[in-house]
Length: 237
Image (cartoon, rainbow, N blue to C red; front, side, top):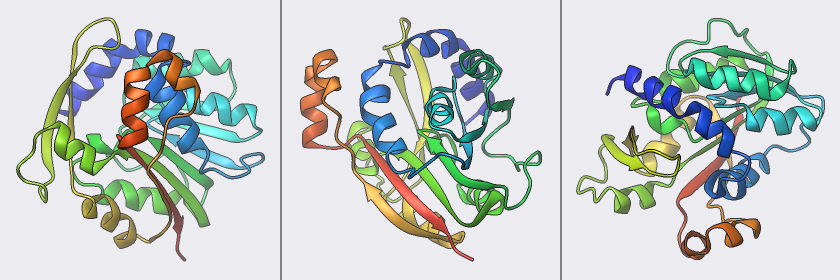
């Protein structure tokens, strides 16, 4: 899969994505409250927002007193993150799959990576970099597409494979083809434990009440079967 395709997709989506992110149901009332809910007492903590998109998660964490550094593969997303946060936080363009050369060892209390790991085929190097830049006993919070949901959605017949998949998003005013990787549950968990993390929490989230008024169909579906999965893991030393 071409990483350039992923960057181009998010560059194209960036303006509309940023305009909708505050209230788009799957983000605002499903992923975001559940993912951020796994970050306890952010005030005074240094947090890395990896694959930060237009900076909405950073905006919330900054408002709660955290110090935030964010990066994203899309230059257009980073423009929106900087504008949204009005000089607060620090944001730069970087590929989640590449070494975090600008970031020092043991420099963050928390890393949050929301709905981005599925763009990476091999998680090991990224997780090794997460481990390196986290302080001892630091917290990693990720959200991903649920492996059981993906297996059904993509009509896969090879559950155990890490396989490239694609779908068309229609919720941003134009159809956009999005490429990612589907993987099994064990391929979501074992790379974390192999690379120095202890699993603290696995959350199969439910939408919050505000979701229902905007999208009652998916509100009902998500209360019956999860589309996402959130994981909190702790850096071992």
